[in-house]
Length: 236
Image (tube, rainbow, N blue to C red; front, top):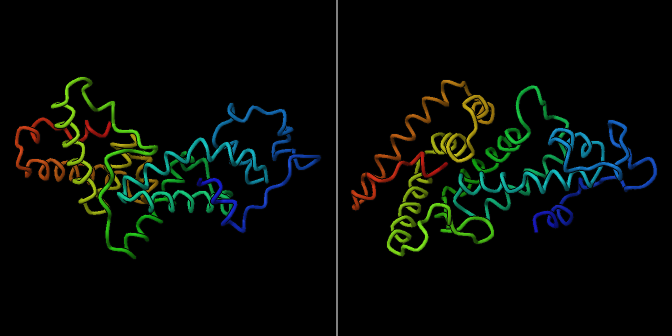
């Protein structure tokens, strides 16, 4: 659906056809003979910037779920996450040449764009919507639920909901380090690149954010559940 949205909305969608000389990439390989799945994200981006629609589509299919999850975890809103994901890849169509592989991974570059869009949305709306119980595609967090034990499933589901609500309640500068480092397992250096701050700032914010999450969870009525939850572990 998002890919179709690009075609409907973007006036920048001006890729070359896959025939004749236009099927040659920036590095001189015939596009029709390439196995796009075998290329790195950076190689796909170079092809896409040169005008290869197939390369851009492959890149989108490879990375859009990561961008969507990041935006969803930051905003708690599916509609915001969908809009932000679309905007991120529209920006990539326009400004993909700005990416510098010497400064980090392409995914971190996309997260930086998504972060800016989410923060702008939150500033306009001043409201984050409670995150649904299921992830993209309607799949519940089955890996976090003990199979065959209804009571454990209910308890675990409640814990997951509390952790998500606690993350969304964090100030944005604490929420983003939790999402980047704990949910997406980025290094402090990569998170610092996304946010645009010093590495030490990421480390100190993450330490403070985890302490805040523990305090919020301990503030719940079910003390047994709160003691059993390790917030960082729930994000792995």
